[in-house]
Image 1: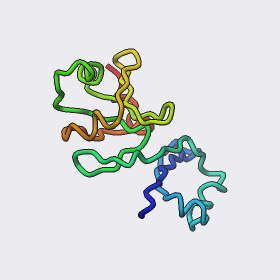
Image 2: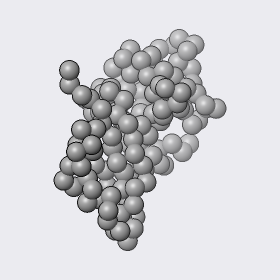
Image 3: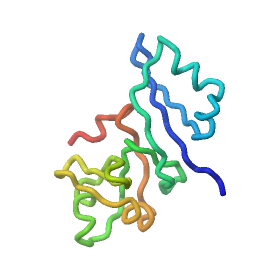
Image 4: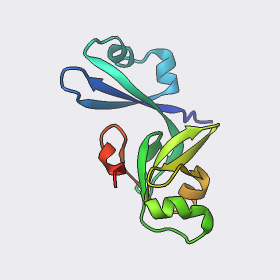
Length: 138
């Protein structure tokens, strides 16, 4: 069985606030893979986020991580999709043992990952909260 546990580390360079992202497998973290500890023990960078891989991909086959901003261009009219339909965009969060989508346009509009991603092939990553926080503004 292939181990699919991954983490996306988000670093910010202290001198100019440049954002840099590196994806590590759990195995590489446990082994202290070259480069991993270099970034952690470096006074030039600070970790501003560690995001889990959801195990899912968007319509373009990009891996979806916590704090990714998703956009869905086509929605069903089912009542359960209301918050994400109206907002159009949502952020992946991990709450109470599951990945959900929070829609900032609506008060805590949450959807289970399987309802949104697996049943809708129009979902794509448009950014993340670190590099494009403005995508969540009205």
